[in-house]
Amino acid sequence: MERSDLIVIDAAAVKAGLDYPGCIDMVREAMKALSAGTTRQLNRTMIHMGEGRTFAQMPGSLGDEDMFGAKLISVFADPAQPGRRRHRGLVVLFEPEQGRPVCVADAEEITHIRTAAATAVATDALARPDARTLLLMGTGGQARTHLRALPLVRAFDRVMIWGRDPAKAQALATEAKADLGLAAESVDDLPAAVAASDVICTLTGSAQPILFGDWLRPGVHVNIVGSSAPGPVEVDAALVQRCRYIADSRASVLVAGAEFLLAKEQGLVGDDHIAAEIGEVLLGRVPGRRSPEDITAYKSLGHAVQDLAAASHLYQRASRR
Image 1 (cartoon, rainbow, N blue to C red):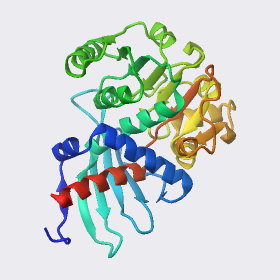
Image 2 (cartoon, rainbow, N blue to C red; image 1 turned 90 degrees about the vertical axis):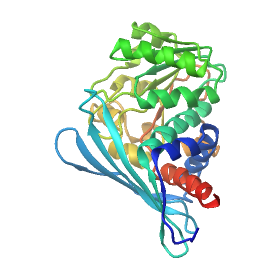
Image 3 (tube, helix red, strand yellow; image 1 turned 120 degrees about the vertical axis):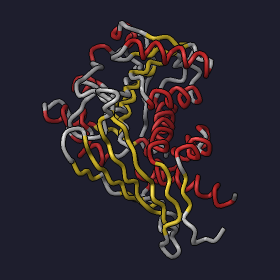
Image 4 (cartoon, rainbow, N blue to C red; image 1 turned 60 degrees about the vertical axis):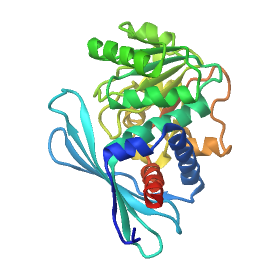
């Protein structure tokens, strides 16, 4: 294969080539590198094109002598599934010697896998070592990838799934038991499920809070994943105020962390409430969980460098073939 050839990696090839343990390792290194300043990215920019239709751009570089590029993605409401949004697009990769585009990869599948991998990294760093009960709030694609990623960092002996559509939650629990061998069950009583959980993930497109600070017990870890722009909030301002708040990117949260911005607008927190970036925790610069009783929260907005690291891995594998 000539180096000038542009490699195209479709969704099926992404799913086949991006294994969860490997992606977790890549994302961990990308987070550390971003906080260390060895990789660079600009904040996500968005063009809104009417209700339920957004085009987003996420440029970044893995380093001065490494790959660079961007994720270009549409976030559109799914007419077949009211309340759901699809993230469709491309990750475009350039090589660092001559600046040639060398790879185009399916962004939707990369986003699904690397987002769950990032949550697993944060959970490994912030959840109590003895965490055994997991609650997933959501029943879409992210719920499925999180079911694969999170058991790689904690030995959960109980997995609860809650959804705004109970039938979908039951179907996903059945699927998780059959396909992944997890002790999964659907739940209807959400406050009771929250009170019993060690790790909670919000993975929905909800525009209003579905998880509340006064439901949480000491020691729980929360991953806030579903909202990636100002506006929709999955957790209330009291939860943000109550927790030790860790960002994937401080700069991103200050402009796009919907739940944090709402708590700030209400005067409950200031910018200094962001205790650290997860990369700073991984580098040992800032402590994550300080005691077993801490309530920790990780806000996931997504890094361009995470997408680029995943695409670079896939490109290198495809080039060798």
